[in-house]
Image (cartoon, rainbow, N blue to C red):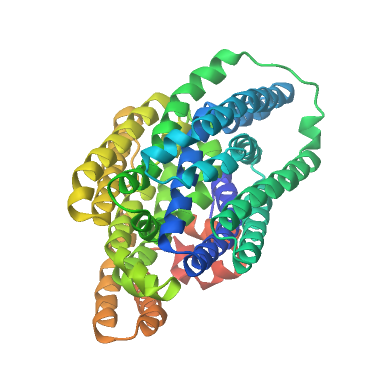
Length: 506
C-alpha cells in the first residue's frame, strides 16, 4: 500500500490503547452496578444516581468548558513549536477551574436542602453535602484527561481513568457494602476512587510530560480560549443535562426505584459508546491539526465512521434482540423491565456515534463550536420535551423514547451541517457493505431469542450466532479496504494476516 496517512496509524494505535482501557473500565463499571443492585434496593441505587447526576451537572458550570480548550489549542501550539504557550494554556485553565469549581461546590452544599425537597428525597441532602467535594476534584480530573488527549499519550489517561479509578472504587465500594454501609458505601467508593485516580494521574503526567511542564511558561491571550470554550461550556451544560435529564424527569414524576431500573437499562444501551469513546479523544486533535485540508479530514472521518459502525453494529444487534435476558442475568430479573429501554437506546446510539457522536467531536475539531452548541440545544430540547410528555403516560419507556429521538435528530443534523459547510460525508460503497452485513446477522439472531427458553442460554448463544453471521457476510461481500489493513496492522500484525488476501491486491 502507498500514500498511507500517518493519522490513520495514530488513530489506530492510540485508539487501541483507549479501547483496552475502555473495556477494562466498562467491565468494572458493569461489575460495580451489579454489586450495587445486589446489595442495595433499586430505591437506594436510584437515589445515588440522582445525587451523582446533580453533581455532574453542576460540575459543568464549575469548569466553564475550559478543559476542552486544552486539546484544541495545545496540539496546535506544539505543532508550531511554541511549547511555552502550550504550557500556558494548561496552567491558565487549571488555575481558573480550581477557583470556579470551589465556588460552585460551596453553592451546592448550601442549597442541598432545596434540591432534596424538589425531588422529595430528604436523604439527598446528606448525599449532596458529601459529594460536593468532588466538584473541584472532577474539574482537575477533566484537565488531566484533556491534557493527555492534547499530547496524544492516551496510555497515561488509561492508567488514571480506566484502571486506577474503577479498581479503587470497586474495591472500596465492595468492602463498605459488605459491612452494611449502604448509601454511604456508594458515596465513599465514588469519592475515594476519584481522589486516588487524580493523585496518581497527576504524578504520571508530571513525570511523563516533564519536558513540556519544565518549559518556560508563556501566557496566552485569554480571549481565544474563552471564545472557543464558552460555547462549548454551554454545550457541555446542555449535553450533561441531556445525559441526566431522564433521571431528573423520572425522579420528579416517578419513584427512585424507577430511576434505578432505568439507569441500568441506559447503561447497557449506552455501552455501544465504547468504540466511539476509544477513537474520539485522538480523532478531535487529528482533525484540529489538519482542519484546513478538507480532503484529508474527509478521509479520516470516513475511516473512523466505518470502524465505529463495523464494530458497534453487531453489538447493537445482540443487545437489541437479547435485552431482557442480559438484564436478568447480569443484574436481577426485576431489571428486565428496562428491556425496551435497551433496544431503543442501542439503535439511537449506533446511529449517533457513527456520524460524530453526541458531543460533535468532528465539528469541534473543525472549530465549529457554536454549531455544536446549537446542536446540543436541539439534543436537550428534544429529549426534555418528549420525556416530559411521555414519562407520565408510559413510564421509563417515555424517557428512552425522548433520548432516542434526540440522538437521531442530532446525528442527522451533524451529517447535514458538515456536508453544507465543507462538503464532507461518510457515505461510500465500502460503508454500505458494512451496514448491509447487519441484515443477515439480525435475521440469524431472531430465532435464538424465540427458540431458546433459558436466559443464560440466550446470553451465551446469541452473540456467537450474530457475530459469526456478520463476519461471514463481511468476507463474502469483500468489505475490507486498504485503510482497514493499515488500521489492523496498528492494532495487531496478527490481525492483519487474518484479513482476506484480496485486500492487498488492490
